[in-house]
Length: 249
Length: 86
Image 1 (cartoon, chains in turn yellow, cyan):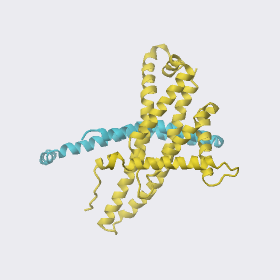
Image 2: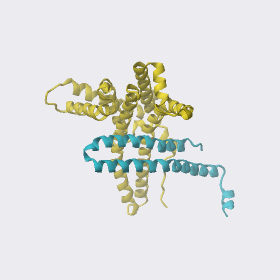
Image 3: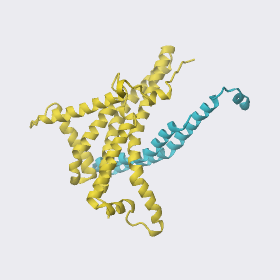
Image 4: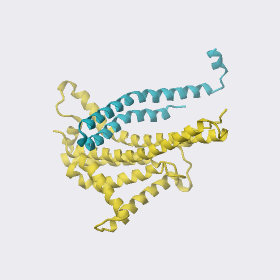
Protein backbone atom coordinates (compact mmCIF):
# COMPACT_ATOMS: atom_id res chain seq x y z
CA UNK A 1 0.00 0.00 0.00
CA UNK A 2 2.65 2.48 1.06
CA UNK A 3 5.59 2.94 -1.24
CA UNK A 4 8.17 2.82 1.52
CA UNK A 5 11.27 3.14 -0.59
CA UNK A 6 14.37 2.95 1.48
CA UNK A 7 17.54 4.01 -0.34
CA UNK A 8 19.85 1.02 -0.89
CA UNK A 9 22.47 0.61 1.80
CA UNK A 10 25.31 1.33 -0.65
CA UNK A 11 23.85 4.83 -1.01
CA UNK A 12 24.34 5.42 2.69
CA UNK A 13 27.83 4.00 2.86
CA UNK A 14 29.36 5.51 -0.29
CA UNK A 15 28.94 9.15 -1.12
CA UNK A 16 29.56 10.09 -4.73
CA UNK A 17 32.74 12.09 -5.03
CA UNK A 18 33.28 15.21 -7.08
CA UNK A 19 36.42 16.26 -8.89
CA UNK A 20 39.70 15.10 -7.36
CA UNK A 21 38.01 13.03 -4.67
CA UNK A 22 36.54 16.12 -3.03
CA UNK A 23 33.11 15.31 -1.68
CA UNK A 24 30.63 16.32 1.00
CA UNK A 25 32.64 14.64 3.77
CA UNK A 26 35.75 16.64 2.87
CA UNK A 27 33.70 19.84 2.69
CA UNK A 28 32.30 19.19 6.19
CA UNK A 29 35.79 18.57 7.57
CA UNK A 30 36.98 21.87 6.07
CA UNK A 31 33.97 23.57 7.68
CA UNK A 32 34.79 21.96 11.06
CA UNK A 33 38.45 22.99 10.83
CA UNK A 34 37.45 26.53 9.82
CA UNK A 35 35.03 26.84 12.76
CA UNK A 36 37.64 25.55 15.23
CA UNK A 37 40.24 27.96 13.82
CA UNK A 38 37.74 30.83 13.89
CA UNK A 39 36.94 30.28 17.57
CA UNK A 40 40.51 29.98 18.77
CA UNK A 41 42.37 32.33 16.40
CA UNK A 42 39.83 35.15 16.31
CA UNK A 43 38.50 34.51 19.82
CA UNK A 44 41.97 34.08 21.26
CA UNK A 45 43.38 37.22 19.59
CA UNK A 46 41.30 39.59 21.66
CA UNK A 47 42.39 39.20 25.26
CA UNK A 48 39.93 41.46 26.99
CA UNK A 49 39.47 41.30 30.74
CA UNK A 50 35.71 41.07 30.32
CA UNK A 51 35.28 38.63 27.41
CA UNK A 52 32.70 39.21 24.70
CA UNK A 53 31.55 37.23 21.68
CA UNK A 54 33.97 34.62 20.37
CA UNK A 55 36.37 35.10 23.27
CA UNK A 56 33.58 33.83 25.53
CA UNK A 57 33.20 30.67 23.45
CA UNK A 58 36.96 30.06 23.42
CA UNK A 59 37.27 30.58 27.18
CA UNK A 60 34.29 28.40 28.04
CA UNK A 61 35.60 25.68 25.72
CA UNK A 62 39.09 25.66 27.17
CA UNK A 63 37.68 25.79 30.70
CA UNK A 64 35.34 22.88 30.00
CA UNK A 65 38.07 20.63 28.60
CA UNK A 66 40.45 21.67 31.40
CA UNK A 67 38.06 20.99 34.29
CA UNK A 68 35.94 18.14 32.94
CA UNK A 69 38.58 16.22 30.97
CA UNK A 70 42.20 17.00 31.90
CA UNK A 71 41.82 17.59 35.64
CA UNK A 72 39.53 14.58 36.11
CA UNK A 73 41.84 12.12 34.36
CA UNK A 74 45.45 13.35 34.33
CA UNK A 75 45.74 16.05 36.96
CA UNK A 76 48.09 19.02 36.59
CA UNK A 77 50.65 16.89 34.69
CA UNK A 78 48.27 16.72 31.76
CA UNK A 79 47.92 20.47 31.22
CA UNK A 80 50.39 20.32 28.32
CA UNK A 81 47.93 18.12 26.40
CA UNK A 82 45.17 20.72 26.86
CA UNK A 83 45.64 22.46 23.44
CA UNK A 84 45.47 19.18 21.54
CA UNK A 85 42.47 17.89 23.50
CA UNK A 86 40.57 21.17 23.12
CA UNK A 87 41.13 21.21 19.35
CA UNK A 88 40.15 17.53 19.15
CA UNK A 89 36.94 18.15 21.06
CA UNK A 90 35.85 21.12 18.96
CA UNK A 91 36.82 19.52 15.65
CA UNK A 92 34.90 16.31 16.38
CA UNK A 93 31.95 18.29 17.72
CA UNK A 94 31.68 20.49 14.62
CA UNK A 95 32.00 17.55 12.24
CA UNK A 96 29.31 15.67 14.22
CA UNK A 97 26.84 18.51 14.55
CA UNK A 98 26.40 18.83 10.77
CA UNK A 99 24.17 15.78 11.20
CA UNK A 100 21.31 18.05 12.31
CA UNK A 101 22.12 21.21 10.33
CA UNK A 102 19.40 21.55 7.66
CA UNK A 103 20.44 20.91 4.02
CA UNK A 104 23.75 19.40 5.16
CA UNK A 105 22.38 16.67 7.42
CA UNK A 106 25.36 14.44 7.30
CA UNK A 107 27.82 13.66 10.12
CA UNK A 108 31.27 13.57 8.55
CA UNK A 109 32.46 11.15 11.23
CA UNK A 110 30.11 8.46 9.94
CA UNK A 111 32.94 7.62 7.54
CA UNK A 112 35.70 5.53 9.07
CA UNK A 113 38.64 7.59 7.77
CA UNK A 114 38.95 10.46 10.23
CA UNK A 115 37.96 8.58 13.41
CA UNK A 116 40.70 6.11 12.50
CA UNK A 117 43.23 8.93 12.12
CA UNK A 118 42.20 10.41 15.50
CA UNK A 119 42.52 6.97 17.11
CA UNK A 120 45.97 6.46 15.56
CA UNK A 121 47.11 9.86 16.87
CA UNK A 122 45.86 8.82 20.33
CA UNK A 123 47.65 5.47 20.00
CA UNK A 124 50.95 7.14 19.05
CA UNK A 125 50.50 9.74 21.82
CA UNK A 126 49.97 7.32 24.68
CA UNK A 127 52.69 4.97 23.52
CA UNK A 128 55.22 7.80 23.11
CA UNK A 129 54.26 9.27 26.49
CA UNK A 130 54.59 5.85 28.11
CA UNK A 131 57.99 5.15 26.54
CA UNK A 132 59.36 8.59 27.42
CA UNK A 133 57.97 8.54 30.94
CA UNK A 134 58.74 4.93 31.96
CA UNK A 135 61.36 3.70 29.50
CA UNK A 136 60.57 1.12 26.79
CA UNK A 137 60.99 -2.09 28.80
CA UNK A 138 59.31 -0.76 31.92
CA UNK A 139 56.42 0.61 29.85
CA UNK A 140 55.90 -2.73 28.12
CA UNK A 141 55.95 -4.57 31.44
CA UNK A 142 53.60 -2.10 33.15
CA UNK A 143 51.05 -2.10 30.36
CA UNK A 144 50.90 -5.87 29.89
CA UNK A 145 51.31 -7.24 33.43
CA UNK A 146 48.86 -5.73 35.92
CA UNK A 147 50.09 -5.68 39.53
CA UNK A 148 49.01 -8.43 41.93
CA UNK A 149 48.14 -11.14 39.40
CA UNK A 150 48.65 -14.76 40.57
CA UNK A 151 51.46 -16.58 38.71
CA UNK A 152 49.17 -19.34 37.43
CA UNK A 153 47.02 -17.15 35.18
CA UNK A 154 49.81 -14.74 34.25
CA UNK A 155 50.28 -16.04 30.65
CA UNK A 156 46.57 -15.64 29.91
CA UNK A 157 46.41 -12.16 31.45
CA UNK A 158 49.55 -11.17 29.56
CA UNK A 159 48.03 -12.07 26.18
CA UNK A 160 44.70 -10.40 27.00
CA UNK A 161 46.39 -7.20 28.17
CA UNK A 162 48.75 -7.18 25.19
CA UNK A 163 45.89 -7.40 22.68
CA UNK A 164 43.71 -5.02 24.66
CA UNK A 165 46.36 -2.34 25.17
CA UNK A 166 47.92 -2.25 21.71
CA UNK A 167 45.08 -3.33 19.40
CA UNK A 168 41.60 -3.09 20.90
CA UNK A 169 41.98 0.36 22.50
CA UNK A 170 42.54 2.36 19.29
CA UNK A 171 40.17 0.15 17.31
CA UNK A 172 37.28 0.52 19.74
CA UNK A 173 37.98 4.26 20.01
CA UNK A 174 37.59 4.70 16.25
CA UNK A 175 34.63 2.33 15.90
CA UNK A 176 32.76 3.96 18.80
CA UNK A 177 32.72 7.39 17.16
CA UNK A 178 32.13 6.07 13.65
CA UNK A 179 29.36 3.61 14.53
CA UNK A 180 27.52 6.04 16.79
CA UNK A 181 27.35 8.68 14.09
CA UNK A 182 26.44 6.15 11.38
CA UNK A 183 23.68 4.66 13.55
CA UNK A 184 22.26 8.10 14.37
CA UNK A 185 22.32 9.09 10.72
CA UNK A 186 20.56 5.85 9.71
CA UNK A 187 17.83 6.45 12.31
CA UNK A 188 17.22 9.99 11.02
CA UNK A 189 17.18 8.73 7.42
CA UNK A 190 14.72 5.96 8.34
CA UNK A 191 12.22 8.30 9.99
CA UNK A 192 12.69 10.92 7.27
CA UNK A 193 11.92 8.37 4.56
CA UNK A 194 8.89 7.07 6.47
CA UNK A 195 7.57 10.64 6.86
CA UNK A 196 8.01 11.45 3.17
CA UNK A 197 6.48 8.16 2.02
CA UNK A 198 3.42 8.35 4.28
CA UNK A 199 2.90 12.00 3.34
CA UNK A 200 3.05 11.11 -0.34
CA UNK A 201 0.64 8.20 0.18
CA UNK A 202 -1.97 10.48 1.72
CA UNK A 203 -1.61 13.33 4.22
CA UNK A 204 -4.54 12.04 6.27
CA UNK A 205 -2.72 8.85 7.27
CA UNK A 206 -2.67 8.50 11.05
CA UNK A 207 0.95 7.33 11.13
CA UNK A 208 2.45 10.53 9.67
CA UNK A 209 2.34 12.73 12.83
CA UNK A 210 3.84 9.94 14.92
CA UNK A 211 6.77 9.37 12.61
CA UNK A 212 7.26 13.13 12.33
CA UNK A 213 7.25 13.48 16.13
CA UNK A 214 9.81 10.66 16.31
CA UNK A 215 11.94 12.45 13.69
CA UNK A 216 11.91 15.66 15.75
CA UNK A 217 12.69 13.80 18.98
CA UNK A 218 15.53 11.86 17.34
CA UNK A 219 16.99 15.06 15.89
CA UNK A 220 17.11 16.47 19.42
CA UNK A 221 18.68 13.26 20.66
CA UNK A 222 21.32 13.39 17.92
CA UNK A 223 22.43 16.85 19.09
CA UNK A 224 23.11 15.25 22.47
CA UNK A 225 24.85 12.26 20.88
CA UNK A 226 27.07 14.50 18.72
CA UNK A 227 28.22 16.44 21.79
CA UNK A 228 28.56 13.33 23.95
CA UNK A 229 30.66 11.42 21.41
CA UNK A 230 33.05 14.35 21.03
CA UNK A 231 33.32 14.49 24.83
CA UNK A 232 33.79 10.73 25.19
CA UNK A 233 36.47 10.60 22.49
CA UNK A 234 38.35 13.43 24.18
CA UNK A 235 38.05 12.00 27.69
CA UNK A 236 39.07 8.50 26.58
CA UNK A 237 42.14 9.94 24.86
CA UNK A 238 42.92 11.69 28.14
CA UNK A 239 42.31 8.51 30.15
CA UNK A 240 44.65 6.49 27.92
CA UNK A 241 47.39 9.13 28.09
CA UNK A 242 46.81 9.42 31.85
CA UNK A 243 47.17 5.67 32.33
CA UNK A 244 50.64 5.70 30.73
CA UNK A 245 51.58 8.97 32.44
CA UNK A 246 50.80 7.59 35.90
CA UNK A 247 51.25 3.79 35.79
CA UNK A 248 49.87 1.59 38.56
CA UNK A 249 52.53 0.25 40.85
CA UNK B 1 3.98 -25.11 2.32
CA UNK B 2 7.20 -23.43 3.37
CA UNK B 3 9.23 -25.59 1.01
CA UNK B 4 6.92 -24.73 -1.86
CA UNK B 5 7.34 -21.04 -1.08
CA UNK B 6 11.09 -21.49 -1.00
CA UNK B 7 11.01 -23.33 -4.32
CA UNK B 8 9.11 -20.45 -5.91
CA UNK B 9 11.65 -17.77 -4.97
CA UNK B 10 13.65 -16.21 -7.74
CA UNK B 11 17.36 -16.69 -8.17
CA UNK B 12 19.31 -14.89 -5.45
CA UNK B 13 16.22 -13.79 -3.56
CA UNK B 14 16.58 -16.50 -0.92
CA UNK B 15 20.20 -15.57 -0.34
CA UNK B 16 19.35 -11.90 0.09
CA UNK B 17 16.57 -12.71 2.53
CA UNK B 18 18.76 -15.00 4.61
CA UNK B 19 21.49 -12.34 4.66
CA UNK B 20 18.99 -9.87 6.07
CA UNK B 21 17.96 -12.41 8.73
CA UNK B 22 21.65 -13.01 9.53
CA UNK B 23 22.27 -9.28 9.94
CA UNK B 24 19.33 -9.07 12.30
CA UNK B 25 20.65 -11.97 14.37
CA UNK B 26 24.17 -10.46 14.50
CA UNK B 27 23.00 -7.09 15.71
CA UNK B 28 20.29 -8.47 17.99
CA UNK B 29 22.72 -10.86 19.65
CA UNK B 30 25.34 -8.16 20.08
CA UNK B 31 22.84 -5.78 21.69
CA UNK B 32 21.70 -8.08 24.52
CA UNK B 33 24.79 -7.96 26.75
CA UNK B 34 25.58 -4.26 26.42
CA UNK B 35 21.90 -3.45 27.00
CA UNK B 36 22.01 -5.17 30.38
CA UNK B 37 25.46 -3.71 31.08
CA UNK B 38 24.49 -0.11 30.40
CA UNK B 39 21.42 -0.61 32.57
CA UNK B 40 23.59 -1.73 35.47
CA UNK B 41 26.08 1.13 34.96
CA UNK B 42 23.43 3.87 34.82
CA UNK B 43 21.35 2.36 37.60
CA UNK B 44 24.27 2.26 40.00
CA UNK B 45 25.36 5.76 38.97
CA UNK B 46 21.90 7.13 39.75
CA UNK B 47 21.95 5.38 43.12
CA UNK B 48 25.34 6.91 43.87
CA UNK B 49 24.11 10.37 42.85
CA UNK B 50 21.02 10.03 45.02
CA UNK B 51 23.07 8.95 48.02
CA UNK B 52 25.71 11.62 47.58
CA UNK B 53 24.45 14.53 45.46
CA UNK B 54 27.66 16.54 46.02
CA UNK B 55 29.69 13.96 44.07
CA UNK B 56 27.26 13.97 41.12
CA UNK B 57 29.79 15.64 38.79
CA UNK B 58 32.47 12.99 39.24
CA UNK B 59 29.94 10.17 39.09
CA UNK B 60 28.49 11.51 35.85
CA UNK B 61 31.89 11.62 34.13
CA UNK B 62 32.72 8.11 35.29
CA UNK B 63 29.27 6.93 34.22
CA UNK B 64 29.82 8.18 30.67
CA UNK B 65 33.17 6.40 30.61
CA UNK B 66 31.52 3.17 31.76
CA UNK B 67 28.77 3.55 29.16
CA UNK B 68 31.37 4.18 26.45
CA UNK B 69 33.30 1.01 27.30
CA UNK B 70 30.16 -1.13 27.52
CA UNK B 71 28.61 0.34 24.40
CA UNK B 72 31.65 -0.53 22.29
CA UNK B 73 30.57 -4.19 22.15
CA UNK B 74 27.14 -3.31 20.80
CA UNK B 75 28.74 -1.06 18.21
CA UNK B 76 31.09 -3.84 17.09
CA UNK B 77 27.94 -5.89 16.44
CA UNK B 78 26.38 -2.99 14.57
CA UNK B 79 29.40 -2.64 12.29
CA UNK B 80 29.68 -6.41 11.83
CA UNK B 81 26.07 -6.55 10.69
CA UNK B 82 27.08 -4.40 7.71
CA UNK B 83 30.12 -6.55 7.05
CA UNK B 84 28.05 -9.79 6.86
CA UNK B 85 28.32 -10.45 3.14
CA UNK B 86 25.27 -10.33 0.92
